[in-house]
Image 1: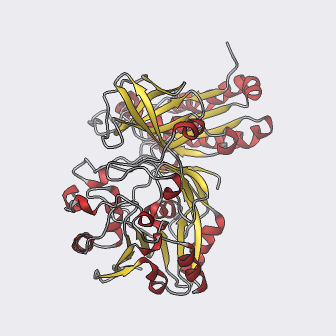
Image 2: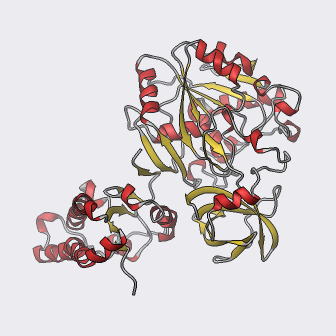
Image 3: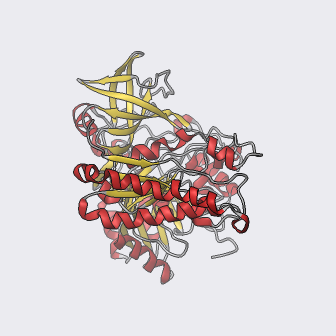
Length: 164
Length: 349
């Protein structure tokens, strides 16, 4: 096995379904969601640190607009992603001296199993398939990681920005 | 907006097949139609441009230079052309396989198929989501070296290929465009000097153009998928645009590419220094915020360019201007005539 040069923290837990209001949410289930969405990515990054340092690698943390918006009934999942956004930004600053880069990517709404679970009663066939984000990934992995470190991207957005 | 609203007729003999300098004219002797804020049109020679602008106005030009982006390639279908569109890295591009210069795709190519270009290869990784004629394409060597060896400027059936020089403008500095950002083509040194002497500012940004868009296929114009283009709005340019707006001068985009870049860099109150990759679609639903005018060419029916034009003036006035252009025998495409559009003043602004 070669070293790790790219770590994508994609796995996430939507939390309780149907999605509860915060006032009535199960605290145990909340802790579990935070463990999966916020603590585990950091654990993986810590594990991979020596190899990422050697490869001047890139960490991609998958985030969500729910982490910024404050949508009703998205508080559990959303706060875990808000936390992950801050982890991404902080790590980008802290790991810069080691040559490791960190970005956050919001893939946007897509026709996935998790999206269906989030909207159990909705027909989600109008959402695009995940392949809609392929150009973004192709673009991102060809950027110099140190240039984009600390950025938060929307894969389906109209602008993929780099420092001017 | 419905696609049929962007449809119009114009005879194919109005496609410019030769640059003006090969028709015995200077580049700046093409014609210039002006569409005024009231929707009426007037007709000029391009060298009149300085007289149509005022001291304190600012022209924003695209400083991208054109690449020899059209490559001969061999596939299982025989000899084809591969037109490069957008660079993601030296070896990874969005590219358009075509049957030939005159015959577009999409071609019946398989995902993972490898094209041969000289002794290098180009692997078709994945067709572009929503735009099946374009492919994410991986080259075995940097595409710039393939272009240097085999490339020629992208051209289409209405015009033969001309020397590379014909596809550059006075402002072509940074190589990267698949096709010439042609709006500035008629700005010669003498026009430039007259503009500067009159106190009309000229500033630059970069947006590397991809291959021409084809007709919009969706019935709803706004649903068309657009692919990204690499751009850079430098801080000095953002400052010049903001200062011009602040003192009441007019900002004139030279080319639709400049509108796309400036609107991408618009933050709701001003233009900021900004770089990256933009797929922004400027259409009547988004409006335009930065520019007061657009200097451009004459565009094909049912294209996203026309959707952009109809953010500056009503679609009725677009149609009226284009009808007049046909009536006055204006020439279309990159070697053709010019069109200066002043934004119509609607309720706000």
